[in-house]
Length: 534
Image 1 (cartoon, rainbow, N blue to C red):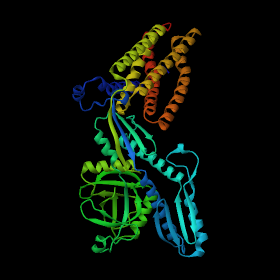
Image 2 (cartoon, helix red, strand yellow):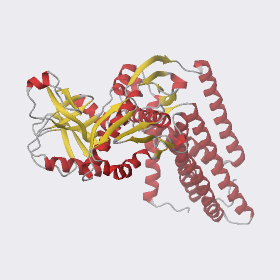
Image 3 (cartoon, rainbow, N blue to C red):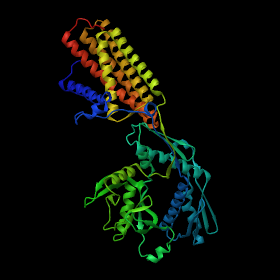
Image 4 (cartoon, rainbow, N blue to C red):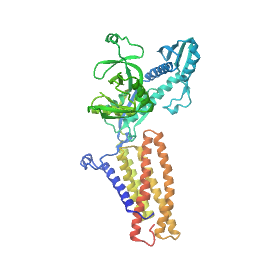
C-alpha cells in the first residue's frame, strides 16, 4: 500500500489543486474575484439565513380551487365511463356545491352503473403527504331513482387540500432551489399558508415573480363552427369556454383536457424552424399515448395550448404526432421562454398563491456572536493540530497537513455546488473534521502496535494502513448512508447538515487514507529510518 504509481500521485495532487482553486474565491474580495482569469472558478459559499439574513415570505394558498378541480375531474371520469360502456348513458352531468349530479337514461342499466361508479369512491391516503396516515373515504355515492350523486366528504376535502399544499411546496422548492443547495426553508402554516425563507436573497420581487406564476399548461380541442354572434352572446355548450389568445382575439375550447402539464417529463428553451424562441417539451408514456391518439383522429383541426388561462398557441394538426414531444411557440422572447421552460419543468402549482406577508430577516446570531463562534472554532482547530503533533510527532504533522487539506476540499466542493452555509452546515463540517482525526489516530495507533510487535518501519506502515483501512471504510460508509437518508427525508437546515456531512466524509477518507499515506510513504522512502518516530 506504500507504492504509488505515477498516475495515482498525479490524481491525488490534482484533487488537492482543484480544492485549493475552488476554495480560493472565498478568501478574496469581490474586486479580486473579478480580476481572476476566466478559466479559474469564482463561485463562493453563500451564508445562510441564520448567518447573513435573507427573505421571509408568507404565502396564502387558494385551496378552494382544488375542490372545484377535483369535482371537474370526477365529472370527466363519468363522461369517460359513458363513452367506454356501450348502452350506459349519463346525461345532465353537473356540479352543485361539493357534489357531481347526473342521471342515467335506462333504468335497467342501474346495476352496471353502480359497478362502474363504485371505484370512484375508493379510499385515499393523500399520496403527496405520507404523514396523513390511514385511508379516508373521499367520496360517497348515492342514487335516487335514475339520479346519481357523488359527494366529496369532509375528510376527502381535507385530504385534497393538504395534498395540494404538499405538492405546491414541492413545486416551490424546485423553482427556487432546483439543485437543493441553497438550504431554503419551506413549511406549512395552518391549513392554507406556506412559509418560505431564502437565505442570502436580496431580490424578493424576483422570487415572488418566479413562484407567483401558476404555470398550469394544458392542451385542448378547439371548438369550430360557432358563429361570432353565438360567441358574442355566450351561446356555448356545457364544458366549453371562451379564452383569450396571447396575441389578441379569442377562441372557444372544450374544457376537457387532452394532455396536461403533469404529463411533461422535460421542458427546455429552443427555437422553431424560423429561429423564433420556443420551448421544446417531452411527454411521459401516458401523455404521449393520449397526444398521439388525439392528433391521429383530428388531422386538419386546430388544438389549443393553454397556459394559465390564456391560449399561447393554436396550431393546426398536420399529421399524427407519435414521438411524445413537440415545441411551444408564441411564449415570448428568449428570456420569457427560458423562464417558461424552468416553470414547466418544475411543474405547475396546484393552487394559486398570493403573498400575505414579506420581510427581510437579519442574522439571528449577530456580528458579535458570529465572531465569537469563529474564534472558538479556530481555537479548537489549533488545539487539535497541537495535540496531533505532541502525540504523534512527524506523523502528526502529516495528519495536520491532511486535516487542513480536508477543510479546503470541503469549502471547495461547497463553493462549486453553490451551497449555502448555515449553523447546521458548520456542525457537519466540524463533525467530519473530528472523523478525519479519528481515522488518522486509528491508523497511527495500529502502526504503533505493529512496531511494538517487532515489525520493521516499512512493514509496520504497510500493516497499519492495511488493517485499519477496512475499519475506516466501514465506519464512513454507515455515516454516509445516514447522511443520504437525512438529505432525502429532511428539509432546509437538515439537508444542509447532510450535504456538508456527506462531502466531508468523502474528503476525509481521501485525505486520511490517500494524502497522508502519500506524504508518509514519500518521507519513509527518502529517509529510511530504522525506527518510526511515532
